[in-house]
Length: 164
Image (cartoon, rainbow, N blue to C red; front, side, top):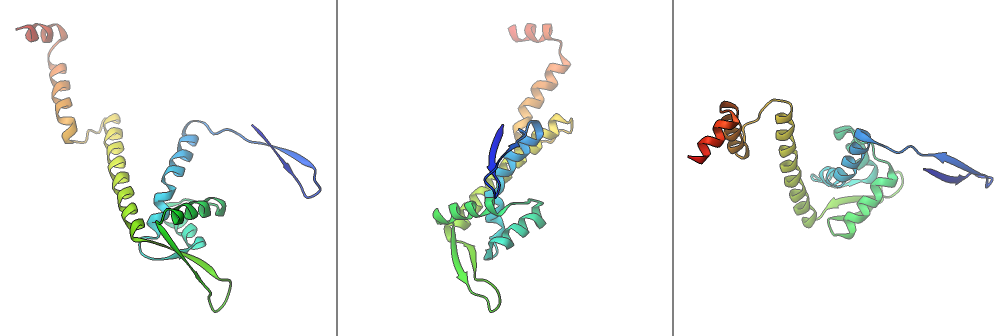
């Protein structure tokens, strides 16, 4: 894929974009999908301004997020009444817009956190099983019994015992 850009003299340059594939593409999609949860989580304990949110995402979760990515997310969260904003004019420096969770935002964060925990737990169990480290769970008991029975009894005997 190619994109055109113009420099300060109006000369068009072509940049080559490389398409992400495999694990790199999957990781990118995973990051995009979980970024809203991460932003809300940074605001759980109080208000922060945009650069502080970006810094916390990087320090705590290792997520490097550009300003051009974070502010549209913050704007969407504000428009859905999950965030409220306040401009604060410090004694020194530029005024800053602080973002804080509303009560709806706290509820939404709880919902997303619960969904994430459930999903991550399910994936952890699935990966543990696929790596041969079986994790005992209620959902696996019937499967374990069926698999164990299948291993003990040859297929022709299972069919014969089912007929009787």
